[in-house]
Image (cartoon, rainbow, N blue to C red; front, side):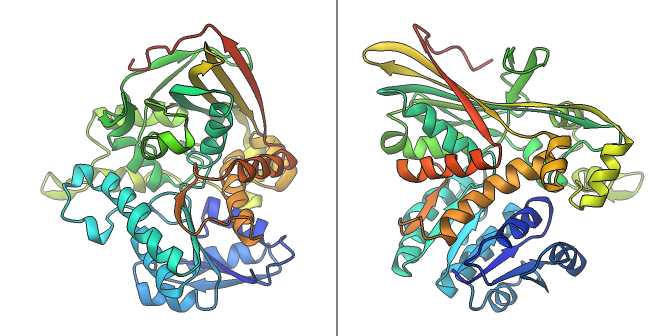
Length: 423
């Protein structure tokens, strides 16, 4: 590929742009954002970047900006995904999305509560046909979770003959002295926090309440006290539900559990009703709680100079955990496969690449999918999710991740049965 457009120059988009700048077969990277200053800022750190101001809600504007591109990378919030997908299909180019878009136009008659899952199914089946006809590839869910998490879940399941349960867990414990409850998009974070979560149970996808079904974990692999994790809206259980037979050895149960400072900050707001989008009247003034809270939360840092200042001001904690547990059978025996991911934290990430730990893991994790695409290592045509790589592609992804210092340990424990993850 010669020309790529990255739409969204925030924390993760700017990371992908900077990494693409190092790819020898890429001649030009269109760095697009509604805020021209954000696009210009990342381009100042690049050699091949071209800043462009684009309103992602304007389909024709997106198509004009991406004209001549062989790949469109979407790092925008969920509500822009339908436009991004349509632009890629109209242009006949390949597509990558760190998330999976909501409100697919063809699924708007589905009840809102079930619309997202219906949209995933429609993208697989119908949009996939369009990308295949264009001899192009679309990959959704390509950040750290989902993304790296899907690769690591596949790595675990490959140790099994049969899989019963997959439990995917993330704990984020990075805290600066400066008030920063989230190290990625605050808008996306707050939206996820108030959304009902997804789980796969006995082969059926169900919805669960945010912050519910809490579990406690103590991992000797990390220098941390026991941590609490809870249900959180994420794609992984949905992907496993759709792709259980082909990619997950018949897995019947799948969970995503999340914990850390973002959860601790958000749960009281959720319980107080302050994360919703329903307009309320307070002393004669109309207020949308989500927007009010969002206005008072600082954006996650992405500029190297700002990151340096935050570190110099002081870091309270710089830890976390990224774990997969897969339960099933191996050679007729009950086993549990436990995988722990290791990656640079805030301080090490800045020292290595002038990034935050979130940018390093999620942004570079996303970039490894981009790297597969731009180096013509994805031969699947159509639309796939990040868990649907071939075993060979999984191995290549892991090798590249290791070169970045993103590594893992894995242990197969015999005689371990699935534990209760319903909390």
